Length: 112
Length: 123
Image 1 (cartoon, rainbow over the protein chains, first blue to last red):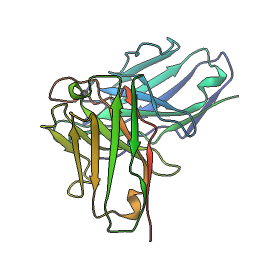
Image 2: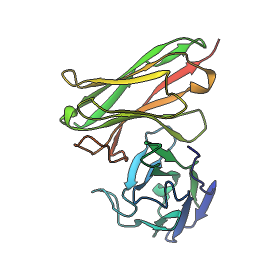
Image 3: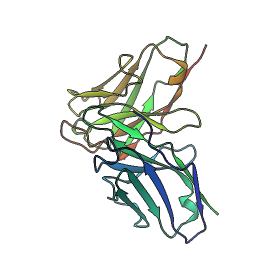
Image 4: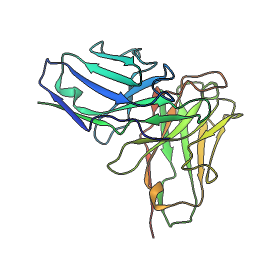
């Protein structure tokens, strides 16, 4: 399985919005609505932020939203806050033949 | 409190073996699929293996297939990862993660993570 493609870094000022892209293929991102996103602060475990492309677990602020178009999924964070600075990883089901999931390489979000 | 706690990591020589454990608490462990996900130092996340709630179905990444074995003991609320024929590229923090699926097939996302245990493969 090949890793999904994410930008290495994005940045934004407090209050602004940023979007992180996640590009795969028709065998993973494009083929299923099983994309999830994780936030990871340095030295901490990942935290689920979005699942099934656009669903938010309870407790995740509605500033976080997810979407998908074709083979590319996106995570949008609006009203940026300092505590949003972290690494973000996308993840997709990799298909009924491959089984399992594939992660993106991760995106470092810097809040300026 | 709902939590996962990994243990068993350490330094091992190439070709050696190690067994990781993940103790679950605060939820009905036997109802949920579980996975192992690893993160090499300074690198991204990589899914390693998954197991259904009953233990009857298991799944592996190609990179570990034939070398790693996932299992669980629902009477002890514990998940395991037996790692054999270890290589330098297996060096990573290994996280156990809960999948919300209560049926045979995982949902393939992870709603609870442990803090991880570090495995270092080096001579």
